[in-house]
Image: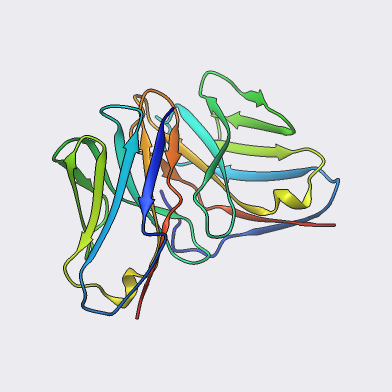
Length: 112
Length: 110
């Protein structure tokens, strides 16, 4: 479900480190997953997506891993930069692009 | 290309006043439309979604309502705002693949 009532967890890293952000999803019927980046005062921006028939997908500096057995998603950011500082949300949706349900979110802070 | 417009960007309203936030989508037809709310430091909560004109599904009981008078127009309303309605309101659309969010409206009820 949506953990909208909880304060967001935080992750602090040094510039150049790799970051791993984790997310547990709730609906075993979900077959499409998205990672979003949200900067302060802005709407969520698409980062990368993955379908349930895959367990890994790579983009530019980002990799998403999907473990359907334990209903877990992770976002790996390589060589993290200060501009990566933001809140990161995972989101899931069932087949046919039904309503998008967001995970809790993680605040990533990158120190120069 | 598809774009989504949401306005106003910021709004300060007194308790008990009405609300109308508008969202429009361009460059597509028959999109699924969504209203989300985000309290400060919190995640995104789905408020309403619509799969077609006049079709509105409410996710949580609340002081707000939504309407879809046209295919690419989604309106969030309230007759009397409460302090707890303060937050960041986001409109989004989806069709065939992916979801795109608007830039959001920051509502402060005073």
